[in-house]
View 1 (cartoon, rainbow, N blue to C red):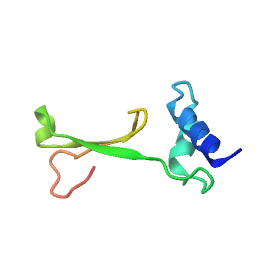
View 2: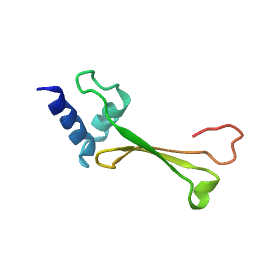
View 3: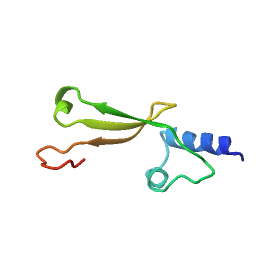
View 4: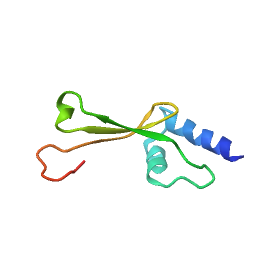
Amino acid sequence: MDNKELHDNFIAQINNPFIPYEELKKLFMLPLPPRIGQIRCTIVRDKSGWNKFYPKYICKLSDSNKNLLVGKKKANNTTSNY
């Protein structure tokens, strides 16, 4: 398999809605193998409604617009905990 096929296979695994939790956890917790290359992501800040005071940050795949990670500022904290 060449790098393009490995990259596309990895993206297909992430986009699969029926992937088991343990396998999905492994995909997110381990670094990407060097053969796959880079994955392009976009970080979006949501400051609408109540999120104005506690913003939410969303990391999405740039190609498919699928959410990978979401972080939200904790309320009533003096430090920036998410």
